[in-house]
Image (cartoon, rainbow, N blue to C red; front, side, top):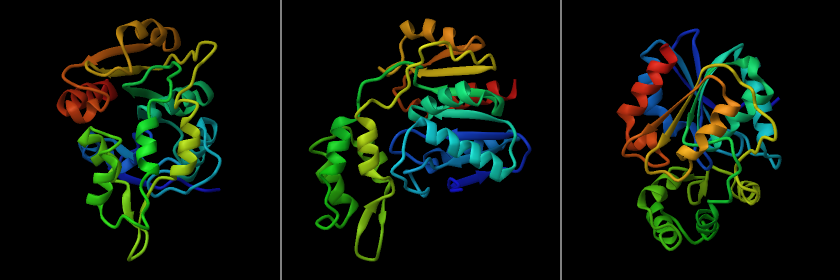
Length: 258
C-alpha cells in the first residue's frame, strides 16, 4: 500500500483533510492550515498522487485518488474527518462524498461545482511541456519561458513552487507532468448522472470574479447537496482563499465550528 505524503499541523482528535488543486500541493495551504489548527483541529495537508512529494503512478483518476484517501485514513487510524477541497480537490471531495460518504463529517468546497468542465489548462500545460530542464537551470529562466504561454504572473509563480533540484545540477517538477497532461485532456471534473445525495453539512465558497462557478449553478449544487450553504466571496477569483483570505478563513472556521 502506497501512502500519500502529508504535513500534519495541530494535535486534536478533530481532523481536517485539505485537498489541493491540479498541479498544486499541500504546502500551498500551510498558512491557512496553521490558522485552522488554532481552532482545535488537526489539519492534514495532503499531496495527492503525482503531485508534491507523493508517489508517482501511471494510474490517475478520481477513483484511484479516492482509494488513496481511504488508505490514508486506515494508515492514520482516522474514521471520520472534515474536508476542504479546492478546484480538482473539490472534485475529489464530490467523488468521495458519492462513494465514501461515511468518512465525511462536513465539506468545504472551494470554487468548483459538480458539473463537467472543459480542459481549461491547455495553455498552462503546453507552457510546462515547453520547459527543457537540460537547457534551463534556474527558476528565472523557467519563468521567462512560461511567460510566452501564461501571461498571469501569479499563475506562473504558483507553478514554479513545484520546481526543485532533482540533483545538484538538474531542476525538475514535483508533479508528474506527462500523466497529468493525459488526464487533463478529458477535463478535470466529474459529471454525476444522478444525485450525489450527500446530506451532511456542506459549504460552497465561490469567487465573485471567477468563471468556475456562477449563480446558475446553485440549483445543481442544491440538487446534489441537500444541506448546502453557498457564499460568494467578494473581490476574489478562482484562488479565493489567497485573494480574500480573511473572509475565506472566517466563513470556513465558523462553518467547521458550527
